[in-house]
Length: 167
Image (cartoon, rainbow, N blue to C red; front, side, top):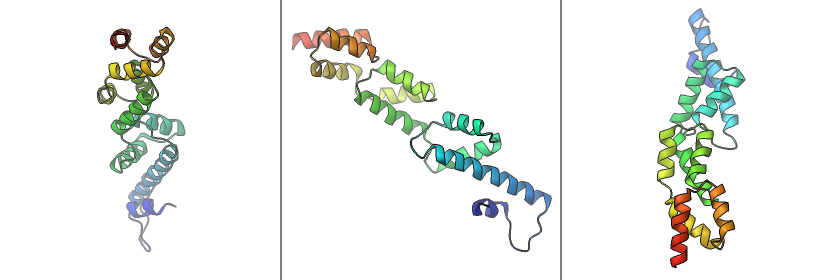
């Protein structure tokens, strides 16, 4: 039996286990189980709050235990949608993806629209990234098709090509 659940339930040697204490203990055990499931899910990579809620629901965790576990993880800083969005957006931008592809990936990670918008807004401007990538890949039609396939806006690519032609 997890020690944290025992302590939060108020159990002590010699104390009678009445109905209310038993209910509290059961609730704390469910919460401890939810924390274990969430902790194992977070072991290898960050997940959004929504994805953790889905994982806990698939595990059969009750909603009150889910809420308690997720609140504890947020207070500890282990679940932070803003941090997740910023890191993921930076990683995708470094890998050569445009804003549209980044927005799509972040939304697929279960992040809210305003969190996604803030993360994309903090990135280096898409036009600057496109220019740098076009210069690196020669700036020909093949490079343009590659960037278009990676979510760069067509207008941004046209502007970047115009800049590359003038240089």
